[in-house]
Length: 408
Image 1: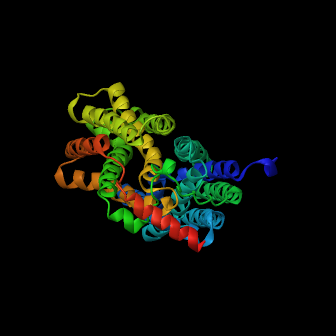
Image 2: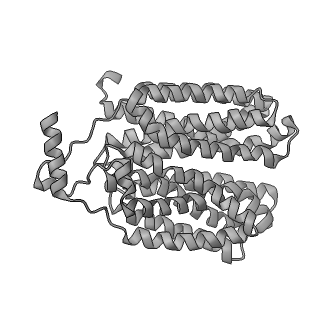
Image 3: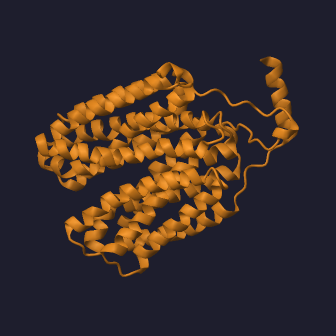
């Protein structure tokens, strides 16, 4: 049966399998308390591991397209899976905090980032007419992986502690990513437009060409805003519930499951919607939902259910916008350099993940962070609803096509 599947379908199946395993890193908060006790370190110091992981993930994502161009998606994905498994296995035996930062922070982040964005971009390029749906399937699997592995890791934590959980996580994640990588094919180069009827097709911008367009930097502003709002609220939701809304620990912790489901819902709903309307407007819609959620957190007296609704809005927005952004980038800057172009844009994921925490630390906690978020969301809304694709000189592009044709 496998032989009868097209390369695109096999790649989609492999991408979904790998993305599910790669999304497991978002269960990290389950390990903060056990590792703090094991290493005799404050929970805050152990929790910093996730910040290192997120930054390493973003950095690896920014160069994964170059690795694919040199070695191919299959080899790089399999390598990422092996590194992920080895890093998790090493984490099971760490005895010092700096080793935890190295194995769980740096190495797991590098492995996860290398596989995540490259496999997503490669998969989307197989389905130029259904980019939103393909992106929703892949990134939806990434979000679902955090939910699925939550229960897997909780089971092994209860059965044998952190060491056993990391070991089983290592085996499962490595096998899934390696099998997924083995199914993948490199997406073919998209055919350049060659006649007037194709004049509206986006030019294929290289990364250096993207840097010269204002649209790239405007989209980067929107992306950082989305990541800052989503990652900060997701990361401190339980603390907000306890310290800001004054819920008990168990009630506040339920926000974690609600966030996971809302995140997945955003990825599926807005990913599919992005094939039916302008993707910049879909991002604008996501920002409106985010503004509603952050506005509730900032200005409303919250109870249990309004708190759940507010964090669900932010998670829905974050998941949906992250899903739409790769295809939006391909609309504006072409498909053939998507891995490199979106890879650089994805550095905003790492920047955004730190901005919320830094703002909260410098200016007085949750309220200050929520206030700055609302200002940035307002700016990003204006960008999302007014931005247009880059203007390009059709004669120069046609001349480029002619040169390419004459040399090929």
